[in-house]
Image (cartoon, rainbow, N blue to C red; front, side, top):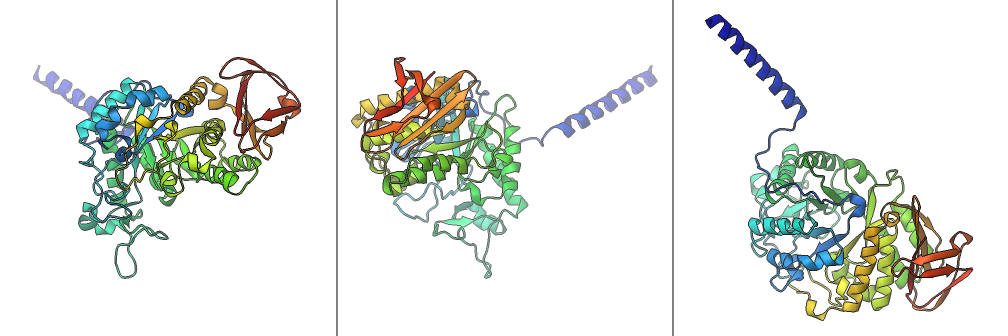
Length: 459
């Protein structure tokens, strides 16, 4: 009897060993963190995303995470389904360009800026956003840290140095408030990925917008994204590169950033470039991208251009011009991003180095309704979200079709302050329906468009 027991015990140990060995070979090393919250079961597909960028310091009078939570209903009603929070982390004490310092000078990768609240405040914000079918992504600053980040003293070898052995600022910049990290250091890269993982586990966030992505090595992004995607086994995460390199898609990013597209829009208004240049920009941004699911995020405002160059009202011909431009940005083979306040015609430049609260009581409700209408149609149109693009632009009019299976959408947007006569291609002539009203519209040889007028038609 004793020998039989020993035999059974030995067999059980052997089976346990085989089981453990098999399991270990198929899994990533165990995490030091426990997953907080449940998987978000309404995560948008990457083509379906409408991204809403929140500058926490400006978004409410309180300038904190609770202030964002209090306006989640308004973001939802706009039609957005992805909330992108600008950096939530404590800011370095060396200030540049403002009283509170740059949110992109990160003092601690695993903490919430006490000005914004606590980890619990972030957890509640994410939970409430999920209840409203909106994902939450965090801004991630991988390239550099604040000078008083603990890594500086604890791990000086994690930073790039000059010939004198001094830690340097990012090369080719005047970013004096931040220190350049060394991506040849394996320990630093592991610590960075661990810090990113911390937020997926501890706040149940749904992805990252990655700052300055072109200047961080591709092999780091590949490694980071591969490990991050394994955390939420029943849910994907969205990854946006604030960069233009096509190889970001090979690294696992879902989106790149439409810098070229935005600068082209500016040239239309500042230099009277033809609207056909938008087609050229689109071709440039999608060059060598062979996966139609990968998209460029396009915008008519973000925190940088809003502060340094102006609001959409300033840049794109006032209220009507800014809306006509947004239609193109939202529909032309893109995933659109809205910067908080532009949807209500906020005319104030928002200094994200300080507190500049948006006055929501001064909302232009007519403009807000227009934004909602534009976004609502996009949310229902597979052609806009997933379709094939064909350009038909003239000097004055951005004209294109988006087509998917049996659905075809025609967009005509006059990007000038004058009435224009658009000569339609034979391929566009015929009877269409207004995408917003359902009214029948006949496109003949000529289409007259009033200043900054746009038409969205469907078959």
